[in-house]
Length: 138
Image (cartoon, rainbow, N blue to C red; front, side, top):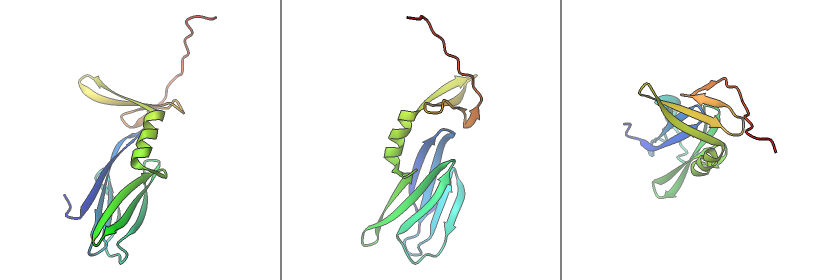
């Protein structure tokens, strides 16, 4: 684990759950963002210790905010598509339905996007056919 690691967030999106890690060097201003273990942003020397960093995860637009709370203490928050992470997650639970099915003993993540009716299996969008069954006609 990096010495300057100050925050870790999990973002559940249609294509899977992504892990975002943020490093902040409070003496050098260093900022590093990793998504799913891959470094996507690095700034080693920054004179301004507070601010925002913008990046994308899958199709989601994300912002890490660094705010001073007192002295050399900082608060780190993550926004996803313009909403605080918790609010974004609440919205996701309304528009997505997620299941984990065990196929031959292996966990398989299935996501239905209720607004588009897109189906994702283990992070890959799959082609589907919509079939409407009517039991009775009134």
